[in-house]
Image (cartoon, rainbow, N blue to C red; front, side):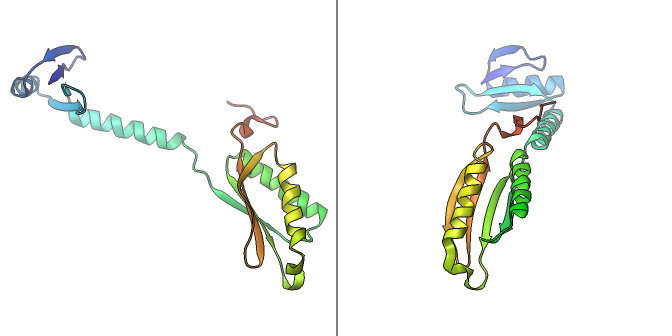
Length: 165
């Protein structure tokens, strides 16, 4: 195996018994760093300290990642202009936060006979939000509703006056 000393310098290729003996002399552990390499790479180090730093870096990476959520906005086929604008503004806010948005048009009673109003409303939303989002799943008709999912564009967070700090 290829052995790396506790100071980070390469010792060379040694057999496993002499590597274990050397680690024991220093009072440290022999840790396999890369099993797939030929020959395998091992390092003399404190395993507890190594494991702690590895877990700490995993926790830091987890803090910085963003979990994408699916936000739903519901409306009817006869939604007023003010309500439509308000819901569109909320959708833009969700998209800028890098969340997906599901638009659902719900039909009550006999409104279902005018499905084209729902599709027209979703087409209008699609056109007006094309700067912020792209279609993740196109409009599809379910039992008493039509829904469409939009995902944020990759550069959405940097638009509209938002700066990175």
